[in-house]
Length: 136
Image (cartoon, one colour):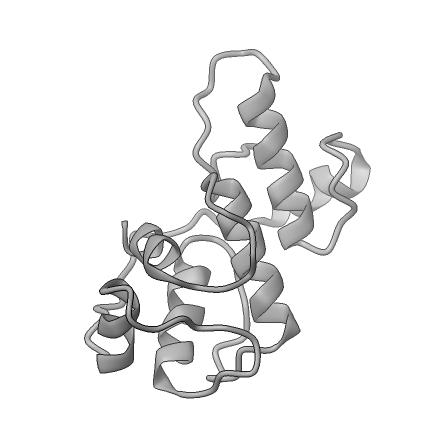
């Protein structure tokens, strides 16, 4: 059982603040109560989680380029190829969401979980900082 599946923590044998933050982010991203306690439900989700792979999506979408440049925000209600790209990147980072090009409540929840796990402003909106972190 490893929290490193999609979360930036160092295995040091201590359950410190970074580990707790990663647990909370993981719980929220997986529809669990974000209490930071690794109980039976969290352990079961961790055991079933797949390790994220290195991103294979090459962000070449023109709208995505505008997001990276700080000229466009992607938010709930948006639709299109740039949202599909966002959903692929989230999934590749271990924050699995349906890739359908529709920025709905599930995508927003995964964006918020990704932001929390990466110590970004948690607002559910994808701007330059979130987009850059997704590509990293």
